[in-house]
Length: 356
Ligand SMILES: *Cc1c(COP(=O)(O)O)cnc(C)c1O
Image 1 (cartoon, rainbow, N blue to C red):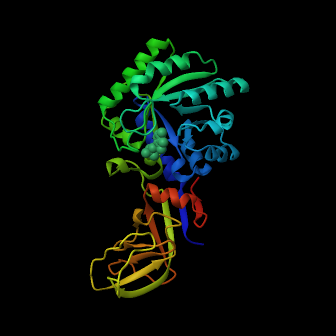
Image 2 (cartoon, rainbow, N blue to C red):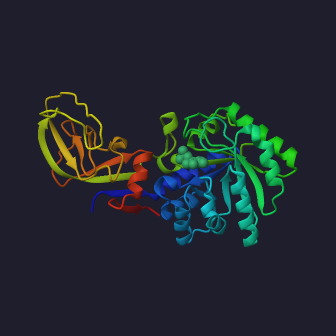
Image 3 (cartoon, protein in one colour):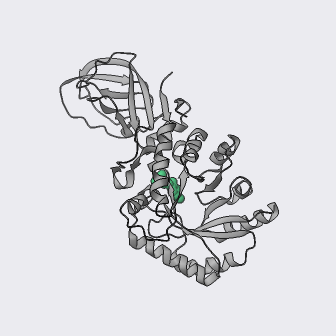
């Protein structure tokens, strides 16, 4: 049955192994982020088999799924928790990222009730303008945390390359280390972890530019897809053939390359543009915006080009295809991060896990 998402677990494990080895040589622990594929437990296990010891996800629902599947490793919640989910947070995870005093206090209360000591990583906004406290407020947060008995300030952290697209530099990493040193001196706590993410920060490790003391990287995309989208690069020593989406051809005809008649907007409010290439051989596959982000599909048959699509159809130009295609044939695609997210969560896409 199609569309089918093939998840190659052996290749994901291989990516995890390579990154654990690369970062391990510089005393950096990798946190394996599974949110990009809705935390398939099979994928989480492949990461653990690859040597990763801490898993992470943004959503408690996904954490629940992992626990239900019998995964007992450390799990970190990497979206700042909602006040309404603190009870489950403390029950199901042992580490989370924080940036609000009220939330930290709520975690402390809940951990107290549960008889636990819960680890928090205080996030500092180093310019990407997503989550994190402003550095000038660090002292006030340290004062708050110092008085709490049931949370351990396990680390300081930052996130880059997500909202503002800010690229990590050695200077940003060094500034974060300075804040961590200050926090240790000010509180007298160990604060053993200095955490950066995501995949965009890997580049510094590869180039030997990551300053000593950054000892945790939260990595998703590199393990899952072998790519670093923020830098627009394929990571050459990792595998990209990890998630393959397969769709079936339902129509195959020669048609003009420009629509005939008056052109309005498409089903999504956009005005489509067309280049006149004359008559072209086109295929429609049974796959659409319910299943995937169409512009993040790369056909694995040479000469096949994605023209666009709508909620349930994707149109391909197959005029230059190296293989002779017919109705009923299956087209495999490599997919980008956004396409992986949608294909993983779409109820219409069947999933097949391949490899141990
Ligand atoms: C998603 C996320 C990551 C992982 O990012 P990738 O680019 O997939 O490696 C790391 N940290 C935080 C806080 C995140 O939300």
